[in-house]
Image (cartoon, rainbow, N blue to C red; front, side):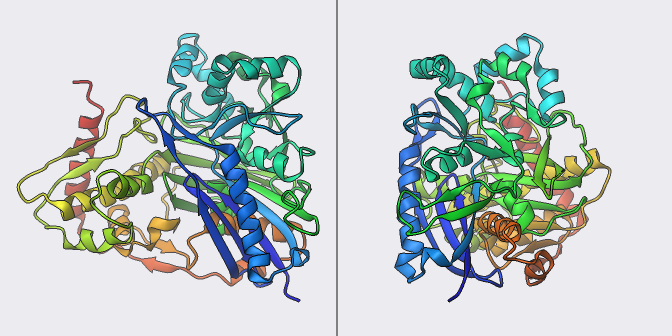
Length: 494
């Protein structure tokens, strides 16, 4: 019988489960979306129970639905939306509040409070992260302050707080395991990336009991066994957990210092592997942990953009300008070249490299030639412009010029976007044949850890489609100048 490795990718928009064969190729895949709860304050939430139920639905579908015996699955790897935070009852496994999504900025006032207390530099120095409501810390602090059951459970030493991976492994193991990995821990803003431990001073500043946080492990550790609440007729070992962007970095083969990838998802993560070198940064980029594997820590520089693919969703669901994301490629090509409009997607402020929570989204440069096609193109182009800004700063901070950008995620199917990205960066962009690099990275990590995959062999079988720049320097500079003027307008307090 064929043997498989399962990759579970629990992302912002939904959950995907893929089975990879002995050669590392996708054999089967299934996906399920979950509801996005957004109120008039811009708060963004998910229902943790819906996510867990979707895992069970997909687990049954990907195995029994395809005639695959769970006994032929040698390992599971998990990747997850990272900074999204939640709290639950350790004894019952029941969540006490909806998951607060990474896009949600409700913790801004808490971050302002800590900055007033002079803790901004401490947070940046110890965690590598700019004090921001983007990360998990302020979200969990908000739960501690606003959900009475949280403090009650904390007093009883019965509170669990963490990211989606720790929630899933707790549910998948029937409450036996409460763990996370170094990559996810490094995104909470509680974790000291130098001492490799939860930072007691920072946890106290946010009002979070360290006892409520999960045990931190290497990314290629054994995380327990699961039947996914009885869906499987045999226990399957979980051999990896990685934040989705870290899993994509691994899946892209960026295993050594100097290699970078861009994940095009709801938002975007641009990550540069810096190896064993922890590079300190000023505001605009994060120093983070890429992963812990083979008992070693690898670091990275990262810039996180709040809205990239989500802007396309906005065009479809809110403006009703398109019926599917696939339409954006042709509409962008049909746009009038004379149009010079720009779109800045600061729906909930701007992420890297600006980190301006008060910025607002704008269309600018609109004229009579601006129509549907031109508006769609401006939204698509904004993805490439934002990624340029992050990479430009990354090169300045690291002192190295990036040779190529490895790109992954659903929007990479848009050939117009990938070519425009290459033009704006003035460097090649490489796209793998599979868009689901997070699931693949987690699965490859698990398969290697379980001894099922040979690392060199499984990565040696990958190939990429390359886009090369074909834009003049003058045109590139003119476009970037217009973009940066639009960004300044979005950050204006007028």
